[in-house]
Amino acid sequence: QGSGGSGSGDVDEARKEIRILEAQLEHSHAAIDSASTRTDCLERQVEAERKSKTELEGRIADLTDQTDELTDALDAEKRARADDAAAVEAELTEARAEVTQMRREVDRSTTVAANRGQSEQSHLRERARLEGEIGTLRRTVARLQQEKEEGEGALEELTLDKEALAEEKEALQDALEETRIDVETQQVELEEARMELEEARERVEELEVA
Image (cartoon, rainbow, N blue to C red):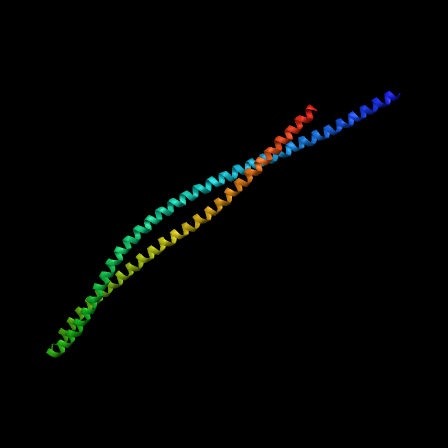
């Protein structure tokens, strides 16, 4: 009878141990499922971040090309405008000098007409001719001035475009750096999750062998 009681106790102890092992096995399986789910999720996140990183790098490359092209265009425009500005300034100076000269001629003709006693009609015709030439020169001066201002405006617009591209590129580079850090962080987390998954699988194998 003592032997029977001892045997019953051994059976109970064995059953208890089995239940403990089953619970541990179930817990390990749950750990595998959790680690597997986390690993899959992190792999998708890493893939998404890598794709975002690639897209940002592509956009930055495009912006770099656009900036280079705009820089070349801006440099060419500056050279052209510098040449144009020099030519316009020379024409303006010449036109202004001619206007001044014409005014002097009007004044002189008025004085000469008065001294010679020329007829009023003859003097008025001469004055009208000179005034007409002055008007033409003034319009030329105004046109040249407008061309000069338009050239300066076009140059300013190109400069602003270049600055806007530079700002956009800088913002994208900041976003790229943040994405790079995110990828590195998630890569570390992914490796940790994979290690946890491997450890859980090894634990299951040990329990199943036991």
